[in-house]
Length: 165
Image 1: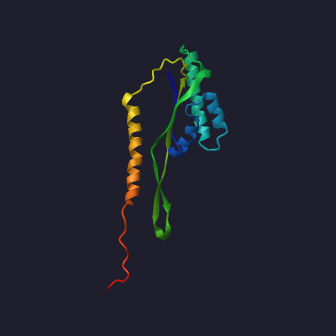
Image 2: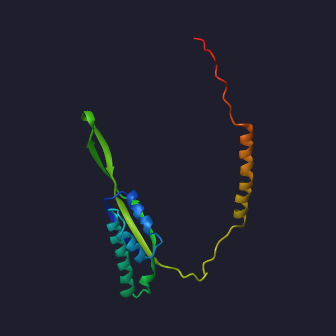
């Protein structure tokens, strides 16, 4: 079961928010909170609020709704920053002109889930032909490179000594 929290219309670029979210993906909640506390980015405080909100959503469901959740065993399953609406703005430019620019917004979403036990219950899917194809491609690749080196590639025509005008 996943426990989610969202912060919408945050005045931060989604690209900048993703830098912080990538630090906490797949980590335990306690470890993610410690990482955010010492991350030197402005958006880290907002991400920490969203993470705490998701944690409280898990607490609420475990206490009030009777869902069996081990809060100490939660990990950050998904952490995404999607594009929000953009505000178009104008900046003065030389010679009476104007430059347009955009102020970006982000929708930050964090989902927590319980860590799966390593009991081997999940089957590993393998494709038989998948291992054979890269090996064959690796064997052929050096031969193509060697042939290109032997031929010397495309040669330039020699430059003329004098030109007529």
